[in-house]
Amino acid sequence: MTTLSSTAPSIWKNHAFSVLFSTALFADFSGKIYDLALPLLVFDLTHSSQWMGWMRAVEFLPNLLLALFIGVWVDKSDKKRWSQWMLIGQFTTLITAYLAVEHLAKPLVVLFPCAFLMMAFNYGYQNARMSILKHALPQQMQNLATARISSLYSIMETIGPVLSGAILMLSAIHHVFVLCAALLLLSFWRLHRLSYQENAAILSNQKAPVLKQIAQGWQLWYQEKNMRLITYAVMVINTTGAVFWIQAIYFAKADLALDSLQVSYLVAASGIGGLLGAFSAEKIRAKIGLGRLLIGSIVLESLGFLFPALYSHLFALAASLFWISSIGLYSNICIWSYRQEAFESQHIGKVAGITGSLFKLLMPFGLAASGYLVSDLGLTSVFITCCVVQLLTGLTLCFTRVAKIA
Picture 1 (cartoon, rainbow, N blue to C red):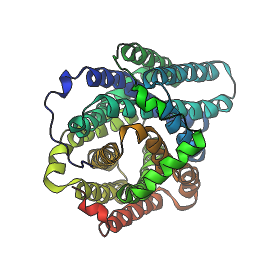
Picture 2 (tube, rainbow, N blue to C red):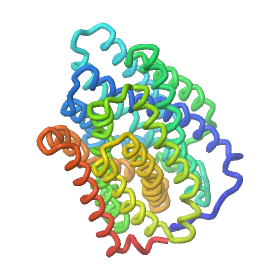
Picture 3 (cartoon, one colour):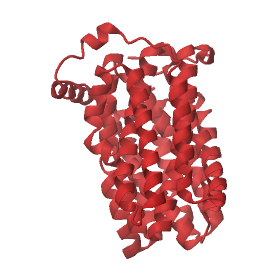
Picture 4 (cartoon, rainbow, N blue to C red):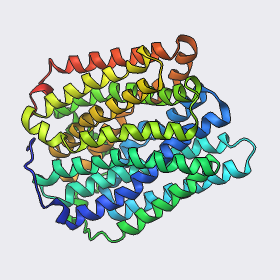
């Protein structure tokens, strides 16, 4: 197994990568606008931290219930065609959500299942995209490709909220869903240009029953001890990060009395920090190793949760989001890179499904509980709890074999 990839300066000349990158550009742009618009819409409809928490929890249920099966289905399918169907599914869901808010007196009845389906289709697309990267690119490009794809998250974190915030000033929040749907159509069109041929030999090895392949994926995951330890840690830090993010939006709206445009600028500022992380992660990994970079980012990110707890001000929240985005992206790149490198291409879909399910296992429960904890204990206590839990998780990893990963 290779755990440290050399830099491949010609990655932008690789046809498969350039198409996948541009496809992801439109899809992730749509996703970031949607991620901001949905909680703002729920707040406007309910003015409730509990409902915001429940909506966010429902979004992560597909990872808990379906990710295992999605991973196997991706391995067994034509990944390009599968990805296109996932994009169409998201497009249909967004139009349905728009029509529900436009015409129904109680749109939450439709928005909850739409939130579930949106995340399910998005996860199916993301899983297939990572599988195509694993199949289409040589091993020495894997780490760099993961870092560059990850940089899109930060770029969209910056551009998406600004654009959606500007649109929100001109129209109702749910009108943003139409823009998101249009971007997904652009992603579909771009993906259609991908010259990608499934490996017939690999597909022929995927004829075993779904449950048997899931069992095989579990065995592969369990035998890879470093991935197992990383997974346990990610289960925790994904939950602390998600709870902080959704309640930070509530804090901005309810306590700081920011309007939707101001919130969008606040979230956009955090994306600038993420760009710093995306384009420096590979160099830092080469110097200190993946394990140390992962652990350091988990520990340092946790400190960002304290900023708004110590100082209830707009600048404290802005600094917190900037810090979390810039430091937190290091851990994401480390996790995704290690998973890409640690498993063979014919198994990456099912392993990604298993780890994707486990990564989000605690999130629905944490998010659903977070709104009630805010009501009972206050935002400050929730932010401090997120910090302490994540800090202990990172420090625990220092005493494991993960710290020695190159």
